[in-house]
Length: 134
Image 1 (cartoon, rainbow, N blue to C red):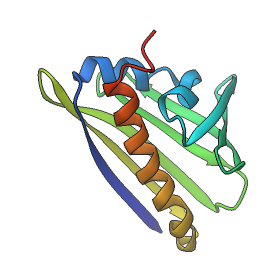
Image 2 (cartoon, rainbow, N blue to C red):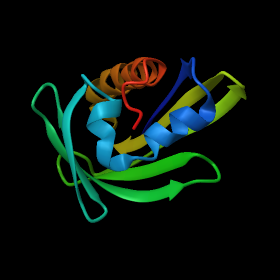
Image 3 (spheres, one colour):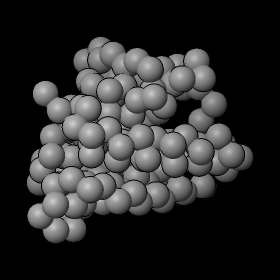
Image 4 (cartoon, rainbow, N blue to C red):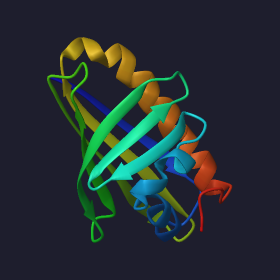
């Protein structure tokens, strides 16, 4: 099984970052321009990537205490996929975004790794610029 573990520093308070991450229905705003659209149908989130790829994800949990969202990709080219995104406080004005993705087949890492890196950097930029705050 492949595992991608990515940590991205965010120059914003953890509460601000969590307020953005926990809004799973606005994922396309948080991860713009890597994502261009997202919709929710119950606990299923459908996301559209800038390259045209459309993926269905089941939201498994939104953990307020740990500032963590877990999801799984449904169907497609994965035999198995489970990921979590978490906001970890550093100090009053900064935090870290932690994204862990476990999946099969291992060969999908070539596709997933750049999307995780680009997505994490986009999240940090958008939170720091307050683009995804209500």
